[in-house]
Image (tube, rainbow, N blue to C red):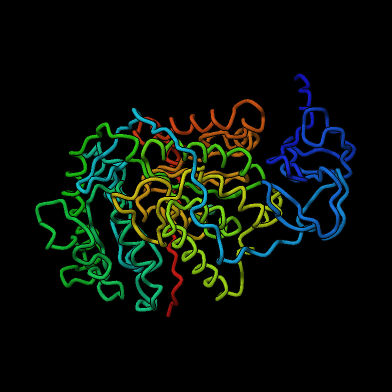
Length: 529
Ligand code: CA
């Protein structure tokens, strides 16, 4: 075994005006470390041990003075902080969130970006014009009561039928916790209901609709999928409504009869899906949902900027990028409203974030409830700092549309879209599926094995240490940016090309390889009964 010489101390500063930088070295840096020439804070001696990803003061910061990262105040010093000190969350007072009035509206015109042409992928074209990246039979459920039966039916379909239909990638039961025991006429119940409806219409399901209902539930099939909310591609015609299997039907005598009914009903759907072939489609048919989870201080330095660069490439190629996570953009609201393409879009951003402020107030919390112990251990002091690092995932394009939670993107709605969702990973992913996402990009610093059965999830690690330790879970190592081995632009292009490969089915993600599937988790702001 040969000794590996430790890397020289490395610090990273986002903007020239910042009075803090973060420590890049694995394991952090001990007190007494002299910062070498060429790094932010050169010549300073660390007064404290500073963990990896955590901040050090680049100069003396007086009590009450703003601590600047990304060029914006992420807090105010609760006491004097000497240059070279560790700047942790206990030294910072969180700034109050900017009021949602008097915001700059559509003031930033992003530099005209040249259209990116000639990029394509192999996808499944649907009857409504949308394109799937996978060819999946989804079984919609109206209520949690049927979940156990559907799970058994799905297992049987996979074992007995799926091998006969080699062009079908998977069979997925859309299980959820909604459908009964809820105040279904409450105004906010519209959110979980339209979420379920729109997920069942996701482009990865080929327009096939198959519904399993209990019979007595509040969310009746006709309420979930009213006439006109969907197009049926088969010979039954749109008036027939979606094919529904009702477990309480008198015809079902015993469990086996229910199971057999579901399994046999799957056959014609599998036959039609199996007859489909991938075809070359322009990259503009991608609908990429981006989000982060298990963030650390590197999220905003490596992975999220690379995803932001890739988002700009996607928008230039005519594709759609969905970014989300209300509590993680709230502290940067003026960046969003100023990047809105029109005053109407800025107004919609204010409407959604205002609604979310009031939703949080009802629970007597605010956006500060977002951060986790892991975020703080990873160097993110508070939600203001986390937000600045989170929002860079959206790149620099103008925001062209805003979606309310559970809403589905219209065919004409392209470009950079703000899909207003909670930041919760599983709820955000569920709502992005409802929006029509056919590919998911997920950045993580602390590490999460997150995956979805409905859509490929490309996971991007913020640090090399995580990418190495979780070598068979992370698809991309953006830690190479902090290591000085790749630029943000290079990582962005690498991710863009990987997305086209994954969309085409040429590459599988690690989550697909291991079949790591998180549950759908609905956002239900309405009461349960
Ligand atoms: Ca998240």
